[in-house]
Amino acid sequence: MKTHLMTVVAVTCVLAGCTQSTAEPEAQGAALLAPFKQDLKSALVKGMESGPVAAIGACRTEAPMIAGRLAVDGVVMGRSSHKLRNPENVAPEWVAPLLVDYAAARLAGPVAIETTKGRFGYVEPIMIQPMCLNCHGSALHPDVEARIDELYPVDDAKGFSEGDFRGVFWVEFPQS
Ligand code: HEC
Image (cartoon, rainbow, N blue to C red):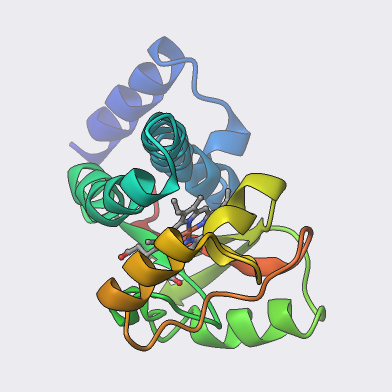
């Protein structure tokens, strides 16, 4: 019975074109995060077409919706930061020490770790690009600043410069 199951898995793997590397936690994590990053970027770019005040709304409602939609088969994902705008984006316990290391430049690039037996966590750092400065820089348009202050009374995510470490995308998943 066991042998039979193994054969089925191997055949499925061949059909799906799966290689050794897709089974590695880092590759698996990157693949799981890809649609989250892509959809979030589209939402932000689309929102920005109507201006940064409108884009605040898009970013605020779309991010948790996209993460929720992709949370299937024991996969959970989100965004977090050492300088939070929304306190609901607080880092899971396994992500918190990584944030400290990225912020202190002791760590750069993606990381995969085993969180509990049979589950892995994968994290990718996010850097500030010019367009992010509209809402995370130090000289915000007064309308943008007013809306952000209204929605996020304890905002800690202003004052960034281009190239700064802003936070992370994280995902936790069962080993495939
Ligand atoms: C239109 C304004 C706007 C722009 C442009 C923008 N953000 Fe944000 N950002 C926000 C808002 C609003 C939130 C809080 C969303 C929420 O409520 O979950 C946020 C949250 C975040 C978070 C989640 C952690 C936290 O602090 O809550 C990260 C990470 C982040 N932004 C990074 C970026 C990066 C990187 C860019 C540029 C590629 C960017 N943002 C561009 C408005 C913006």
